[in-house]
Image 1: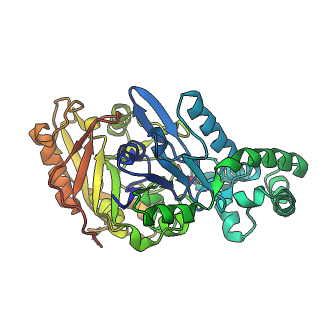
Image 2: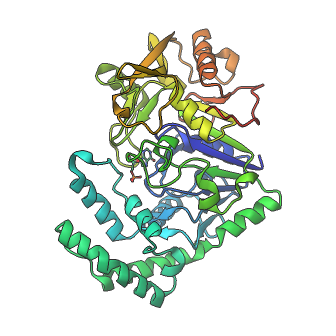
Image 3: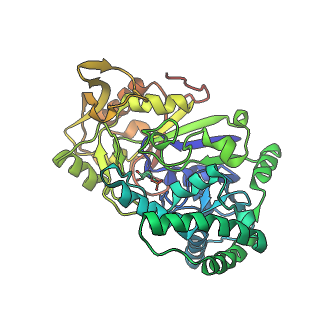
Length: 437
Ligand code: IMP
């Protein structure tokens, strides 16, 4: 496993945390390259549940280096809270196994305030953000008014930059959103104190990751959110503010694209989404409710109930295609146990016109009707199965039919939240990038 990318192939919450934790056993370095504490990666080890928002899921393995790259939007409060939370549970976290890029942009109080106020301002057009300040932080990065971790570590420089930023943000907070402005001195004192606590973790992570790779270390890139939330290729404007797929790695980690040898998509055996925006195969009513209860589909970051629906083959071909996926991993297969029949989306209809592929840039996408084919379900408990040929016949038929519809090999199945509840599919070929579209 020299350099492997793991990314969400749906709208986030595909179970990446558990898979990364599992693959981390074979890696030396685990790297987050985009997003921030909007992510919620759940890992269960020996019955203990860990929810990681910012720190890579490799932290639960001894001897791995975990990296938060320059492309991540870092909230110092959340970072330090997470470090403390892990330490109190006996997990080793220090500057030797957790590295933070000096070029990562910092999320301040004003970013969180503006994120939440802007959502109220948008009313019906709201995105349903996590309210963690992600969008406003990336907006400042692009506008060149943001502060990076290295800026925060130089007090005089930090004062100049924060003063300029707050002059503009306070006008927005008070005059547009009608809230109390933030005090520069208070904010400076708070964030420079936090910067002091960040310092032992900070370094040139891009250089460190390239060096590690050049010395033969195995590098795993942990995507957050999902490819359908990618700012360029997702369901814009109902997306997050970063490149969530393989496309985010070169910019967000300073790692050459051509060194990435495998790209593994993660997707549930059905599909979920949190927040607003198009979700063609969503099931409203009792079926959606049944999937939500069976899969305990409530957000790990915000606790919001997730919208639930069926697997959508053209949507999967779209995300696996533009990310050049070499294989994918199907998670939460056990959740489908007990359904009489399991529909899978195979195409769309819009205003009487048929589409076989996901129409990425079409306006009116929210009116897409999905055409389904259905597979018979199974009733046997599969949570203790560890060998593919021990799965019920109908379950295997479901997996193999979906694989054929999507056209990218499934290399692993996940059948429960624990680290060892996976089924490896021997003989699956991975290594040939797939350009599905
Ligand atoms: P933001 O990333 O907080 O700006 O939110 C933008 C959109 O992405 C919203 O629909 C969120 O619900 C969604 N989102 C952000 N992070 C995650 C995640 O980790 N899982 C699933 N959805 C997410």
